[in-house]
Length: 106
Image 1 (cartoon, rainbow, N blue to C red):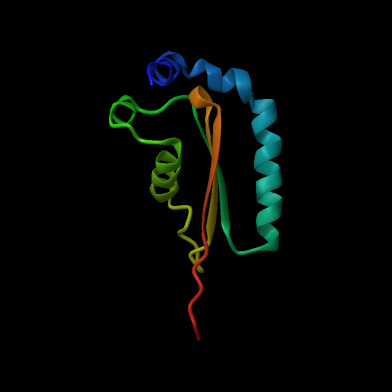
Image 2: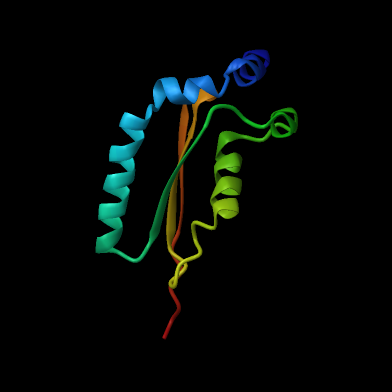
């Protein structure tokens, strides 16, 4: 638990640019944009360097944080309420995915 706190408290915003420079983010964005032409879902990729301090002390998991980011970004807010979020938490070296697919019975 102490090591988790230390990783989150010492991973700075500079880690984002070191691990995900613009030259890396641009192709990711292009692939997501191209793939969205073939379906009606919203796809987002969110990278955080570390958990916010309040959430870290509150014991939030990376999975719960991914769900909160998913909701906060409105990833599901499409005509058909379909969305996927790929969430990366650098401090903990975790990747989470959150998806929602809403289908109404007709």
